[in-house]
Image (cartoon, rainbow, N blue to C red; front, side, top):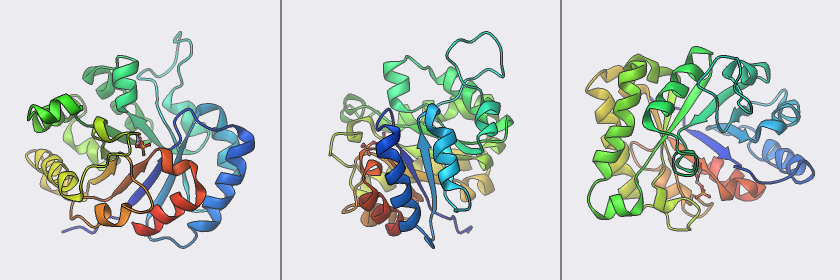
Length: 250
Ligand code: 13P
């Protein structure tokens, strides 16, 4: 079995301003020095340059929260993977539940973004996860399988060696209601098995991270599960001390 290096990625979403983010980056940079986990900051597009320059010389990676499915052209307001590469982005989040639900991103669109990100040399962080209604009606596996299968079919399973999957149950995002470590493990194991149906080695090496109300106080227990390889952190990543604590827990 491969040992997978844990990844803790901050997703700041549309929060903060330059003035508040500068000290946050400095605090995170100093705090995660020497950390075993890989650490990434997925920041709003306009701040990629500034945050990137503040991370220069550190091991912290830069990421974006979204990416276009197109290479270039008349797509007003969109940002291409190549543009992200110009800013030394390593990661791009694709298919976050907020994009799926608030901006109507379909499984097919998410798959196209995934393909484009990887083709351009980014590591895609593919988000999957069920809503509360779907969990309560016993459809968790069906929903996650559908989200995953569209991408496997479009991209091919080999592409997952340049990807991370984030399991983010929608009911746990920003609600303070975290999945239990066992609930997370159950779905993470399911995701790994789903990939293993196509390729054992890819499944074994794939980092599957958990997102949804991860805090300094609950990270350790969740990250201790066999198939949980780190976290995608929203609210708690806007607090330097707490985010550092989460990184250290991984
Ligand atoms: P919270 O950590 O705020 O619940 O957000 C999780 C998330 O959506 C990360 O992408």
